[in-house]
Image 1 (cartoon, rainbow, N blue to C red):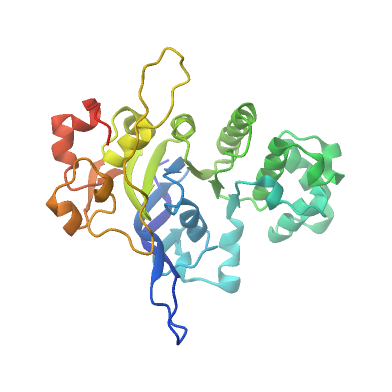
Image 2 (cartoon, helix red, strand yellow):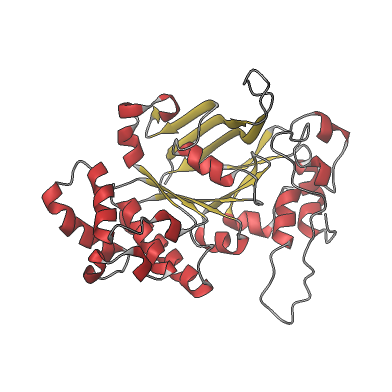
Length: 337
């Protein structure tokens, strides 16, 4: 697990906002801004951040479901950001997405067999006469019974519907799957079952995951590395152990402090992050987080921080992270940001 399956180089996904009287956009929503990131083959990379920070848009951009304004998307040695139509089709089959709401993701008028057959059609290696056999195998992979094959989505629970969505994603024999808040709409006990299924499938089929969530407690147990996103930018990437034990960016620390502990005797005070999430159509100058940061200085509002490596496949985007790290501020400080 040392080669990068996905290589993102300064990708930007901007959407036109207001338009002039001549129909030309006068401003843009910068949903993803200057993101460079490697996703290593065989790993589960977590992507965490507040609602509206651009997590889902970034996942869709990688799969070419959202427009790429600029930058490069490397997948299996090919820059798919420059491909379209028939040239992109073989790569689309190797990249799949599991969405947040399984009920909205499944056609209520189609049986599970038709839903899976539609996906199998994209996998040209499967003959039409073998669709039924292959569909049953897919259901078995996600722990559903063969007799479920002719039922409709409304006859299943939310957890079972999400398993069907996972089976559909596996139908094209993918190498990379984006899970976009795939467990957030499920009960806690069902979440654990789906997460265990995801891990088993990853080991069995050698899959690579991008796991998008706002729940840090799940990230800690599921992901090998975690990328933290704020206002369209990746501001920190660390292995999960280092990130939760000693976050280097003040925003990551604030997210960690906001996670409640299920212990009635715990006296932990939840951290409250001051300020509001900036508008992506008009992000702050310099470091996007500086208006809410408790450690900001003059340079933070004037100059965008560079990426600084903190270890193998780990880095942070902050002007003074080295200084703060040496002082132990990010580790020991109990001050709320």
